[in-house]
Amino acid sequence: MKLAVSALLLTAFTLTIAQPALATTGPGCLRVVNVQQGDVLNIRSQPTASSPVVGTIPAKNHGIIVLKGKCEPLNRPWANRWCPVTYYGEDKSSKGWVYARYIRDNDCP
Image (cartoon, one colour):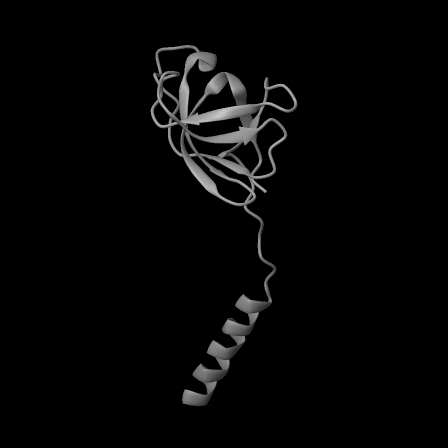
């Protein structure tokens, strides 16, 4: 009995390892739009244009921008909302708020 259970567990473990890793895809990631080549999208500490810049995302970003909650305030049109994001760049990450006018949905890599 022990041998049969051990063989079954070993088979299940082997099949689990043999499965290919699935890529993280789908909603939740973003891309920069409406920002001129050579310019950056500012990441702010709070959802206001007057709050300090805590990071930047290049117009042709080489990183991952992840939406971390709902864009607000909900009573405003999409382009006039602020969205909480985390940007994972080439050499660092930044967490804060970006203006919705400058981002669009994108599949996660």
